Length: 150
Length: 167
Image 1: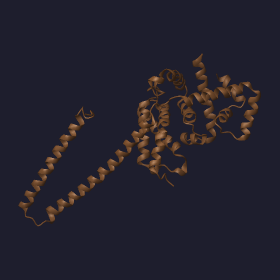
Image 2 (image 1 turned 45 degrees about the vertical axis):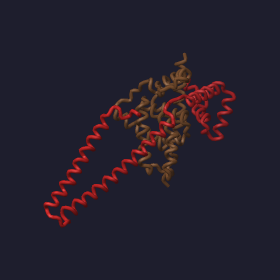
Image 3 (image 1 turned 180 degrees about the vertical axis):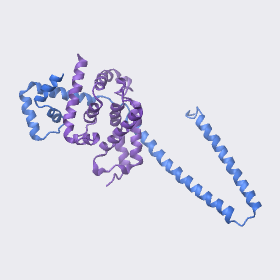
Image 4 (image 1 turned 45 degrees about the horizontal axis):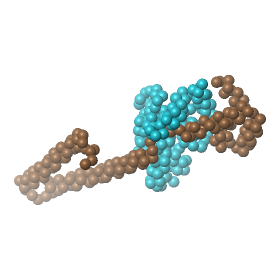
């Protein structure tokens, strides 16, 4: 194998690949043309490399078609935009809640008892909300039939 | 000027997906890991579109470089580059075309598995993805002047392996 490779290099060598790929200068192309007119070995090598190149071009090295990539990219875009949306929404909610709590506890003119009653009401609602939300999230994570379409 | 239109970028990435997957298979030796690497690269490209600067070359060579780097990250994580021969060509063959494709691709995948990873990559970049020598140099981060000789050696190596396989 090594001897054979060496013999090829003594002729026009790597120029054969450049010739096949259209990457040679006009002068180099002429050199290959002239050489291959008289050298049967290089001509044969050129044809073999051409056939090899074609067979690789025709092969199926990846079976994943464009629809799958398109879907995957849609997923990526949706995930990214959804993430940014959630971040902005939660950030806004937290800031608004902070301001509300500050206004209610510090700045409002209500008495301590009224503040406690209102605080307990809203606090209770918040606890109920997060409790239901937590339960729903756990159910969603563990529901083995969630992907079944009815 | 940065790449201005994310929609155009998405369209080009859809076209490039299969080729990038083929390249990743040659590095990782596994179709599933290769798909993960391409997906990671797509996520990088779409979430940081500013990372691509079209003054520095076409999108395809930039994206393939990202895919290649991602593959090397995965390889480093795996700490093993052992190549399962059966995985070099994506095994999910279409049943109708299975016989013809399987015979042709089986021979090719066995031959590819017997040459080096660098040789497989340069062959896939040129003969499967049809990249120019300048683009190949960009993807592989090598001097453009060395591409022709590397590619020629890789083709000779693959040809000799295929000849040996046929005997």
